[in-house]
Length: 545
Image (spheres, rainbow, N blue to C red):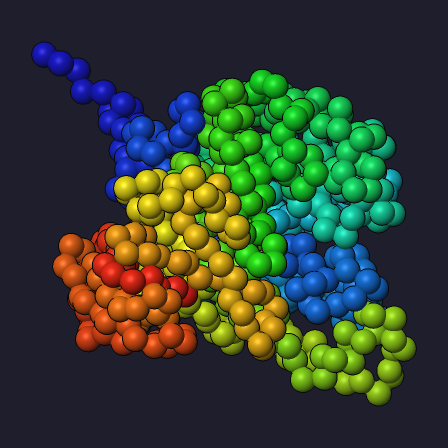
């Protein structure tokens, strides 16, 4: 007769309910070049960065140099409100900026993770007699609990280390030098903080990874040349200390020079390591930064790659970025979830009435005693709540490559010749954008002189480009193309999931050609633009409900 093992049954139930089964999340770990859960299922982390919350950034407040980092922003608030009211403001700010509503919405939109940017000062005091700060840990606990409820992973990011790891505004450096590396005490504090965090979440699968340092040691200031040899030993020290209390979680390591120089990485300091770089495409005209160096290094390091920050541009680049990265098995985190008076983030918060007076002070102006600062900052506390922010669905749809969306013609797929494109001249390369590929991409001649120059593709008879995107459900959409004839007669076939629609293009200037409503299936959809005769320039394909 088999003896009933009640303790074993309890363990199995706990694993199913809280360790990756139907009712809970699973610890993530690395498996070769993949991130997988406990069942071995591959997980591609697609998330948002919770910037400006626990580490406010001046540019997201529209501030100048006098308010370019947290400690300076705090001083501006104190100058206007006084110390006592300023302290109350910041407690309310941190409660209002990221709430349960934000986390629920992030999950609803399809993201599976968040990357909170932490300022060490909110967790451990500076100066002498350093003490842990309860508020920071309570806020992080609350975030983890909310993410657990909505099945989001959390990548904990030390964005501002003790003393600063960059010597720049982004990490709240007090003296514009990377004192984390110049003062050994700061490394002791960082170790103490990370061990505290690791011990706190050692049994929490909602926490996916520990991001030990954000964007350390820029090259342009000389910081990298002086201290880069200290970076990997510091990582190893932190990992060794944290592994004494937490044997489960992944680490994600960033290179120096804004995360992107990996020359110091020769071997993994831990078998559960994910390497990270940041991907911002700020060229004008738009271009995709080459990631081949990271693909090569990934093979050497035999570890997954994750892009911890990308964004701060436009929908065309967002579509192109996620497509490019995911083609190479790289997840991403969009930066940031929301900021002030913008149209290129998922949400935008409105600046309060009278905000111009505050921003003028941040740029060196005089503090005007007549400014109704109390009301201005009170309004800010309301404006940062998600329900009072403006949502931009086009931004979210672009990065997830899902309908409705506007496809820039140059963002055809990355599966190569005869799969994503067919052109007759495969020797010549594009002069603009995707310059290693043969599809001709040219600049728009725009008299209005936009901030970013537009681009279009050139297709001749017998040539085509192909696109893939998703739909959350079966949809009927309006479809139009921005196109012009170069060599007539121009006949174009627009293939949608294997069915074609014929267009005859006669206009030699740019015109929007509208199709009858088209039906798209739930899940992945295929679209191909094929020129049957003549030659055409194609700017975009717009697919809207």
